[in-house]
Amino acid sequence: MRRADSPDARLIRRTMLRIALQSSLAVAITVALLVAVATLVVLRSQQDQQNALLDTAIQQADDVTDPPSGTWLIVLRDGVVSASPGLPHGLPDRAALSQGRTGTEDFRVHGREYRVRTERQGDTVIQAVLDLRSAHEERGRLLQGLLIAGVAGLVLAALTGAWVGRRSVAPLVSALALQRRFVADAGHELRTPLTLLSTRAQMLRRRLRDSPYESDVDGLVEDARQLTAILEDLLLAADPREEVPRAPVALDAVVRQAVGAAEPAAREQGVRLEVESEPVEVAGYEAGLRRAVNALLDNGIRHANEVVRATVSRHGRTARITVADDGPGIDAAVLPALFTRFATTPAEGERRRYGLGLSLVSEIAARHGGSVSADNPESGGAVVSLSLPVQSATRR
Image 1 (cartoon, rainbow, N blue to C red):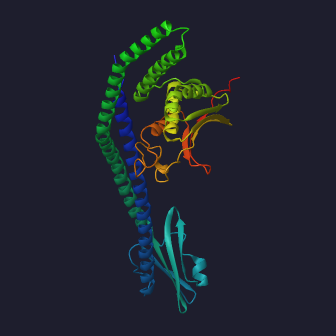
Image 2 (image 1 turned 45 degrees about the vertical axis):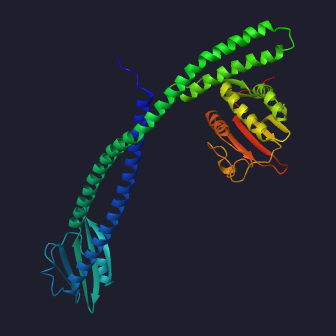
Image 3 (image 1 turned 30 degrees about the horizontal axis):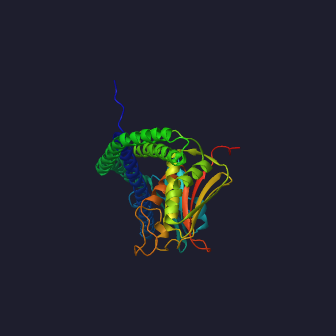
């Protein structure tokens, strides 16, 4: 029975193939350019040599009986035409010879190509004919050699690329495997206390039913449930072996629940939370989207002076979550790298600090095919927006 490939093996194989293809493509382009340049250089050199040979043959033409090898001479003097022995049938160029016009032309006669040079010297017109077969054979040998070298280079580049790809990706695979083991181990260790927390919260809710603390205990049970869902989402996000099935998520409900859960932290900071939403559904992972909204609210609460406003709206096929605060705004030095990990202001403590929260929002947005953006409006404060594609009808 054949064993399924591990994710690490698939990653190594894909990387090997990608680097091998890229190396082969680079070599192919280089070889093609070299062949084109070499062909042009050879053609130009051969043409110059052929023209020089024809000119020399004409200048040294005492008679037509002893032309240079591979050439024939035709002389028109006093209306009489004389030609070298063995002149190919179909030559000379009688039109150029009779008109006495100087010039060079190529002729194809019986499947063979010839170059004909005509020149007038006083009352005499001399025409030299050169057989181009040897030049074509030399060119063919050159192109054949370049082609063989190119194919060998492609094979060598592919093998080298695969070898380099395997060696370069091996440390990355080891690091990813270590990271997955750490997340899996941490998740396994956290499941037990989370289960106990959820169980105790439910038991406490049964005991305090119809008491003044019932709503607070209900919130504790819901927080435990959400924390468990977030843990599961983190484990799935760290494991590339499975694609998490998407489901319709009521974005407005997620935001309202997140705002409700963030109320205690906001009151402690002296910040008022406001929410305005319209019904919008997206296809995605509820736990991941909840993490993103929590991070946006946490960022707004930490930097607001008095109020944080969360808005859910729809613009065509795009759903947008906007969290605005009335704080000091985003430092211009941090804004370009706001959604990278550990982005912070140059002088810590004076203005905003940004760590992992917003970078996680960016990663969650990318997983859902969306994007994030941030800006400092003219009215003050900061606005961070999460845009997601709408893939289902709006709830009614």
